[in-house]
Length: 98
Ligand code: TYC
Image (cartoon, rainbow, N blue to C red; front, side):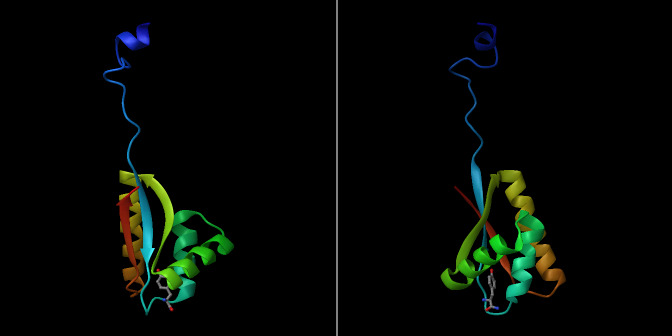
């Protein structure tokens, strides 16, 4: 088969790209409303979903906002941190391989 003779032989078939969880971490200072707004703005959730995740982070210390390929995850982390700093909040956002 042509496709197996070139790019997709069993030996060279590509693995699916690794995925990364993007997580928010709790702190004692960032206002709850700000965290909800961040989750809506950067992770495309409605207020109800965003509030659920914010409360999970608040109660359990961290929570997953989404799972993405490496570059997209890294961009989300940078955008969330930059936005939080612009508003003088210490909100922390990290990524971890799934
Ligand atoms: N713990 C914060 C408060 O009581 C709220 C908060 C939730 C902060 C989630 C960060 O990722 C966070 N105001």
